Image 1: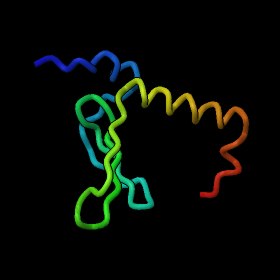
Image 2: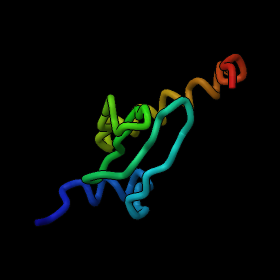
Image 3: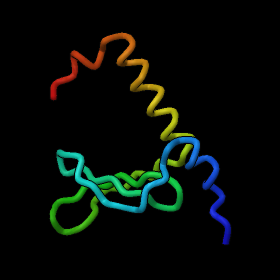
Length: 78
């Protein structure tokens, strides 16, 4: 079966092997089916899941770029 997201995934730079990574605040990210899967976990497995298709991931990146351009990222507590 052909991966329908392969071209879009390549254009978005999502060409890494699936690898779950802890982002912080109980949030994890993994590459699944050509998109990003965000989960929150409480130690007993995922409790919430959000799947970002390539188009949504691109929109999120654009949002963050706009925040950076406007300097809003400096106001976010880290």
